[in-house]
Structure formats: C-alpha cells, structure tokens
Length: 176
Image (cartoon, rainbow, N blue to C red):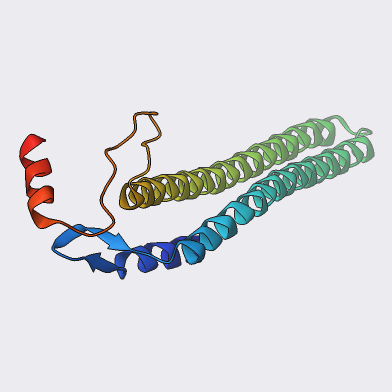
C-alpha cells in the first residue's frame, strides 16, 4: 500500500504546472483514480494482516500457557516422587514453587511481548491507513480544486473559464 501511495504522490508531485501557477497542476485523472482504487483495494488486505497478527498473538499466548502447564505438571510429578522423605519433601516443594513461579513469569513475559508486538504492528497499520486516507483526501481536494468542482463542504467554487486568464487570476487573489 505504501508503494501505491508513493506512486500517487510522485504522480501528483511530477505533474505539469498550470501556466503561470505553481499551485495547480494537470494530472491524468484516470491514472490517479486507478491508483486511488488500488489503495482502496489494499486497505482490506492490511486489515486482514492485522487480524492475522491478532490470531498469531493468540497462538503465541496459548503456546506459552501450554508450556507453563507442562512445566507445572513436571514440577508436580517431581514433588510427588520426593514425598517419602521430609527434608527432600521440603526441597521438592521449594523447587516446585520455583518452577511454577518461573513458568508463570515466562508465560507473563511471553504474553506481554506478544501484546506489545501486536500493539506496535496495529499502531503502524493505523498510521499507514491514516496517512493513506489523508493523502487521498488531499489529492481529491487538489483534483476538485483543479477542476473547479465544489468543495466537500458543499459550497460551490466560482466557475473557471476554459482558457487561463492571468488578469482574472490576479483579481481573484486580491479578493481573497
């Protein structure tokens, strides 16, 4: 999607300026609209990627929980084998508690890491989508402005003559 936005930006950036006006340019409408359609088509793909990341996070957390459960089961088995002797029993209980605490800490750390990774990926995705939206909105405003179309606010802009008139343009600038 970033490549499409870069192409769109380059297309507008490299468009030929209107005579005597550096703020307005001539663009290939069909090409720009095709690029905007391509960006729109990419947004659902980016959303699917975000959903896949969330699914991967859930798998990652589930795997950490399974590992913690396995470690806990191993600790309990170890403690049961040592139950016959008092001194060994105390050591076994202490060791089992350490293993359980370690497993729970590992699971907590894995869950935290997975959450941070997903949050970061979703933040970057949100920024990319917001940037794309802003770029499309800006391009659309430029496009409408270049064609003399009404602004999105619904207020019509004055109609422009088909031929460029420098005096008329200067008069309009003085009124603004």
